[in-house]
Length: 408
Ligand SMILES: [Cu+2]
Image (cartoon, rainbow, N blue to C red; front, side, top):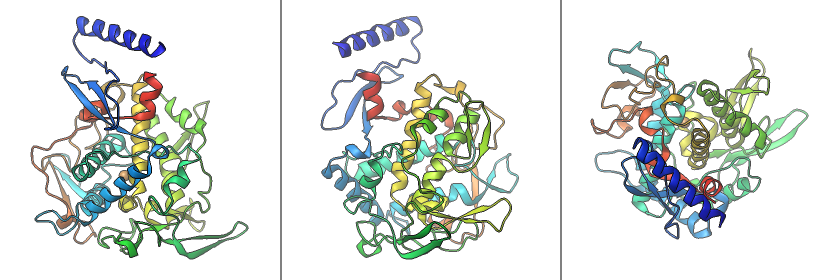
């Protein structure tokens, strides 16, 4: 009954909006949700679309987990015509390119290395587009697959993910002694589908130390829960704090994890939320000999540029995207809540985002050897700006728990 009333309310509300101005209709009837994991959604052009539904990883069935792993491994071994590397490796190359290339933007270049996907406004839109394309690549293998998300506040999720029946467990073979805290283990992942012995071999030219440009080898490396990143789950109140920030220029760095903002608005720099999770999986060591102290990544997830080589990356970023979507739906919808200008090129609302920029920016390899030759070719008409990805449902997907919360 409650559901029916709510549906009627939504229907009346949407009719009112349609008759008033015929823009931004957000009506979506939650019908037709079944085995095929789709919601029905009326898009901005008044057409009905089937939305792919991203589920909490803890809700996946054994068959869904197996299908996800199998689709990933198919991308890892499928080499497109004209490419030297697999589809999966091309995705890693794109992430690396967005972090570690010099980009010449026509009319905007200062010739320096630019971060096009992190540490600035485009963090959310760039990754939204990036992981959606990865999801579409998975769906080309198996159309029932969607990206699961890792809700970092869910105590069960950690052991569900890092298990040999899914993404594999901790690495082995390396012991790290930390004074007063004990011995901690990590290293190359040696069991499960993402062990080298089972075919998960990374391209050494795409697995690079972000500081030195030297190769980090071919094995997936994890140091789960070693100090200083030992605490799991992430407290719900930390996420709620970030979601309560109304200003994009605070919300983005808070969720990306460069700052934390307390009740009084006091900003503390550090490594939180998204950044913290990269460290929780990959492990990081503190170098107290520098001022300020620096962190040295140990494993694959800690080396942000090559981190998509750990398949947990996709679940991690699906959750980042889910929280941005939740923030948007919660009173921060549309282009009023994204910076129109004032950011470096590629980060403003209507800037084209490399590599979907029609050649607007020309990446120039720095010390990264063959990276340019490993990138896929992009169609000149394949153009994406932050403004194009502000509404995730227009891109054809939604999140299951969020739908539950808002629809039931
Ligand atoms: Cu990234």
